Image 1: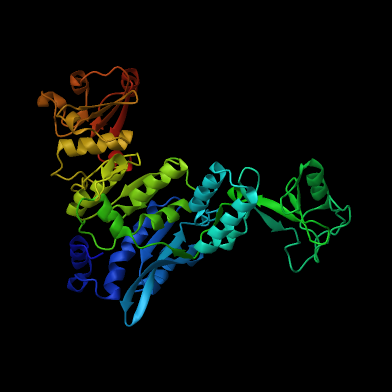
Image 2: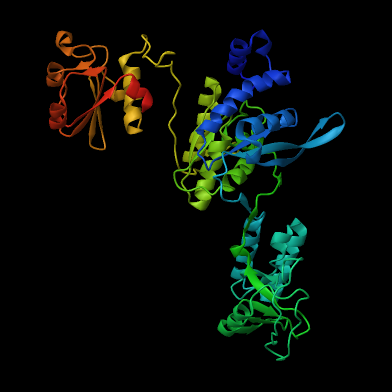
Length: 492
């Protein structure tokens, strides 16, 4: 936001007082049009995440309520950076991530992985390979939970089956404090006496409970308790039974309003580059990964970062794609050319292809890739007409991409009206009388004479031109679709 480009734009838009961002109103002048535009880019079921400190958080909330609608506010997450910034005698260790959805079309929850499951999996794999007895393995698992301070959503799962798969006991009492569940008799599988019935009744219907007992295999555990299918019973009938859930079945929870990750974005950047990259306070990949993972994305969905900075977002997308197999895409925008080339793009290239870190160690690539594009001069003026300064090559690249969704390779940009073929369709552009015989070209209009001079293509053809003097029958016979410039270029 302190970019010289942004400062220059502010100066032109709001006057001399907009040249700096040391006042709240100037910050609002810069952010409002950008956030309004970003809302248009989102799908109806899309969401936006905005990271910031406490300087402008109050103003941002009001501005987002106006642009997105207060009803589409999701949460203002507090990010615990763990590293204090000692301002005014206070160890400030947090920033914010504000979340808004595009619209009420949103019909799912933000979720996240339970923290620390990788460490649990590593321990269990070691215990299994070492053939540690189940009672001792359970003790080791509980020790890890205590030492690492795990959340209750993980520590509940402190028992292991014969395959070292962690499971926990889930209360079978009726969950609603204002109503009552069914009451029925359940016999203990060992004593054959009725077990204790919950005070407010059972969570399950009687037929569900009895069917589960009838279908389940009976196993006696090392502590004398009994498991029948997915129901756990204590040694005797005095203890209320519980249902069984495995940790890998409930390894996700709702995204928390407080996220605690190391503020190690700078260290990450130093490891990727041989020398310290000149970029202040990059976000950690771990934080952005959690946010990306909280969305129910599928193959081809796009993560867009309009303030790309050091490229953390792309790095996080590639890491998350590798972890869960979902092929997300990313679009990054960085306004400073030097940062875009030397830091943003270079970082993404290295983490995708692999690199040697600052310690001289080889780090394997995450896979994936990207296209690096630079924004050129506008093709159209305020009235929607093609600008006089636009050359054939610039318009050709725009036409080809508009029609095919693919970039036109630089080596294929020539003065030929035939731009190339894509998926069986030939793409042509008539612009500035580029044919050899200009007297026959009719300028940018498709005529019989112009058609006779066009490079041949055996298949469907799309021709961009200012006008067409051929009849409908001739166009059909030649398999030609006309797109009029400039109108259908802009529409496409």
